[in-house]
Image (cartoon, rainbow, N blue to C red; front, side):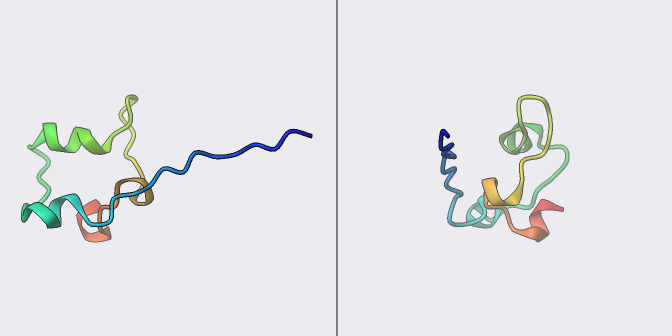
Length: 56
């Protein structure tokens, strides 16, 4: 039987928004695109490193 290994997607250590001292804004589309898949789905906090408060 073949053993399947997963890629280790290492998440960033700190929150993108907290590091830069900005608040997430729905009108800032270019920044928000960093946290979407190519299909437009939101990436999980585990992959992006964003805090729960900023994820909302």
